[in-house]
Length: 187
Image (cartoon, rainbow, N blue to C red; front, side, top):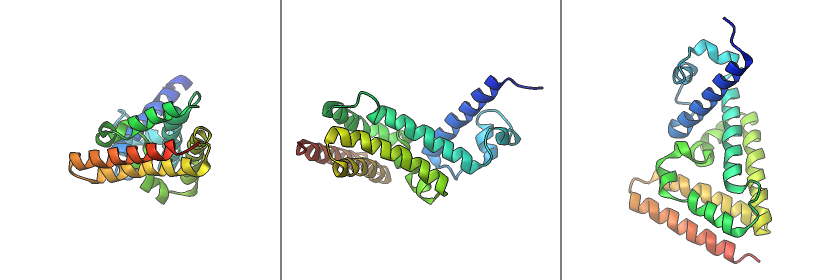
């Protein structure tokens, strides 16, 4: 039985969405192709009609997730510091610590991206640089934009490593306050 092209696109999107959630929650390498396909109700054999390899899926996940992060954190219309500060407050909060599957892929998948092949890292670089450029326009400084981006991702990684919610909150609040002070010093 042949499926329509639209069905194939819908299945691919389900696979991307389900795999991204799973990867951000538990890591990408923890689940095999069969498990990824089972999560959307299909057999493992059907995977290869959508992606040539698991690495190709990971590349697509990185592109999709970082594109969404760019839209949320620095997309069109993000030309003022007030909006950037609201984004930072939203980014550096306990919900983002407790629910990695619904947030930015960088703190959740950064280590796996760093260990991945060149295609994955190039895709990540493209979207990370776009976010940095967006923030650099607002902050009028390339280096401050890199610093703020790194501090945000690092703060989430550190907070997620900790076991005590009160200490996690201290990490997030301290990071947010220091970033805001850094931004306020910019012209």
